[in-house]
Image (cartoon, rainbow, N blue to C red; front, top):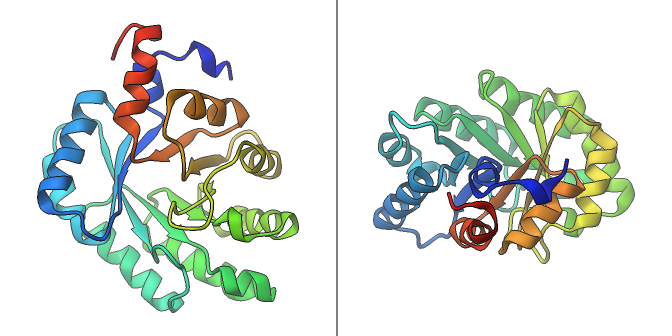
Length: 229
C-alpha cells in the first residue's frame, strides 16, 4: 500500500481511537467519542465498563466500539476472559482486543492458549477478535508461534502491544507479523504511535489498523498535506 498518498479522512479509517487509562472518567469517554465522530475514526477502544456509554454516544454513526479483554496483563483465568467477552458483547461491543497469556506462551502451552482464544472467539459471536501479543516481551520464535495460534483460533487480527508494556509497535514487528499471517489477515499496530509519520510508516509496513490515543494529533499532522478531514 502506498501509505503516503492517504488523505486525512482515509487515514482516520485505520484508527481505533483509544482511551484505556484507569483514571478515565465518563467525561473523558464523552470527549473521546465526540472526537471519533468528528474525525471519522474506525472505532473507539475502551475498557469494559465504558462500552455501554460509548455505544450510546456513537449511535447512528459509523464509528464502532471496541472493548479490551484480559487487559493489560492477559494472565487471568481463561474463563474470566470468556465471561468478559460475553459481557462486552452483551453491552454492545462490535470488536474485542484480547491480551494473550504471555506466560503460557513462554511455557510452550499452546494447547491452553488455543483453547482460550477459541473460547473468546466463540464468545465474541462472530465479532472481530484481535489478539494482543505484547511483542516487546517475546522472542522472534515466540512471535511466530503466537501468530500461528491466532491464525488457528478463528480470530481476525494479531496486534502488537497493549501500550502498557515496556515497548510499543515497531516497524520490524509489523513487517514480521504481516509476513507470518499473510496478506489478508488483520495486523494492528499499537503502542507509541503519536504522529502522522509513524502512523503512515506502520501502514506501509503492513498494518491495516492502528491503535493510538494520539489520533487527533495524527490526523491534524496529516491534514495540511492532504486536504483536511
